[in-house]
Length: 110
Length: 119
Image (cartoon, rainbow over all chains, first blue to last red; front, side, top):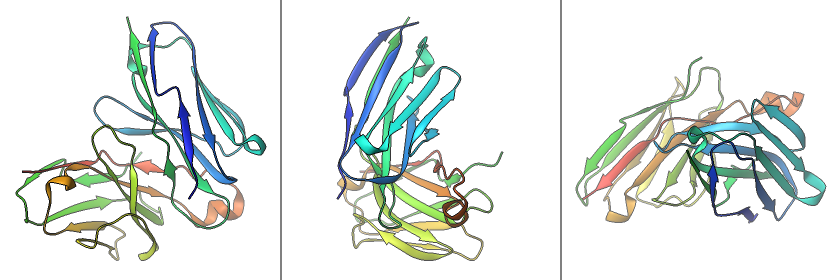
């Protein structure tokens, strides 16, 4: 099956700092989504971004489908950004469910 | 806006007991997914339904079964529970078919999950 690798696995930031999270995938995809799992376990959908660039407030994401990677940018980080960020993809061929990466655990300290 | 509703929020069971988890998808969403997330792990796909028919199956044990009803709610039934079944169980829904034809956004929306503890 498709492989999804996220880096870094762990990240500690001072409040106000910027960060870039990366997601590499092993096959062509027709669906890529970024999720934030907060410390209470809730999974929040951040972006649906199979290609191109999107921005939502302090967050933005870019997917370069031809090179099989996606980046999530967090600017001016806040303590509420802490949690685990997951990238999830669906292969191009077939109606298959999303496959998640192992996630990046982000801790933002005041 | 309405979200995916899961119940119960927490569930404690003994080994070999059975458990039933319920999921109410976002209205008008045609696809429901069940995921299992162990401690410190990423969510693992169990099973999905499109328009009340099973559409895909992942790493779901034979002891587990699921169905989607006429009102689109779904239930995950787990029997002969084992300690290793302790996990956070998520239900998610999306609007699958039409966005694939029109290129619209097809985000997957998750419920708050059911934390199952098997003692």
